[in-house]
Amino acid sequence: KSGFVALIGRPNVGKSTLLNAILGQKVAIMSNKPQTTRNRIHGVHTDERGQIVFLDTPGIHKPKSRLGDYMVKVSMNTLQEVDVVCWIVDVEEEMGPGDRFIADVLKKVETPVFLVVNKIDRVHPERLLPFIDQFRKELEFQEVIPISALNGNNVRTLVEQIYERL
Ligand code: GDP
Ligand code: MG
Image (cartoon, rainbow, N blue to C red; front, side):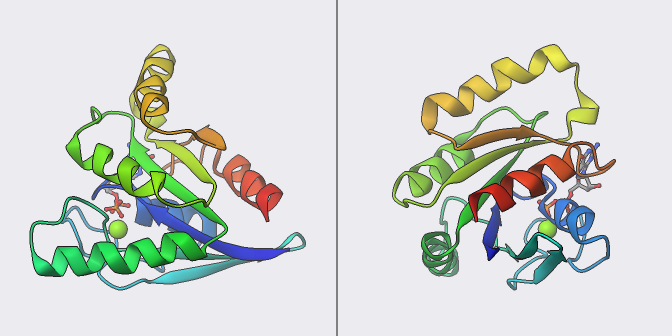
């Protein structure tokens, strides 16, 4: 099996950390500053199941400038072409306008979407379901997978679910 996966989400939700956790090496630039990952730095996961090419897309968020507008278009094309979109969200961050913008973009593509709820090491488990429900109201997901990219919790399950869809 082989395929392409786009990692999307607001700045600082943990996209680069997740990519590094999956690939087991430092390939993406990690920073607290938004938009460090301007380029589509990608990494390839390979094992006996096959190959997954990850695209660490530039942030899809509300366009404020022509550059932002252009980036959204580039990202839209990517989303249409990949096999799975992983929408990473931060369990400590309330759903905001940036998330609704992403949901509206995702409604326009037919690609299966996984909701990846990151930083679960930071919250009590009982806060998880109400958090997820906010997003389920906006969009239908193929899978909802809570993880901690930082300590690796459930990252294997995410990779397994991706292979299931290829
Ligand atoms: P990106 O902008 O989406 O690529 O986010 P980064 O991967 O650069 O992560 C932003 C910040 O969140 C960094 O300080 C990370 O260490 C932190 N972070 C990422 N994943 C986790 C997680 O699962 N748990 C916690 N506690 N922090 C995380
Ligand atoms: Mg990043």
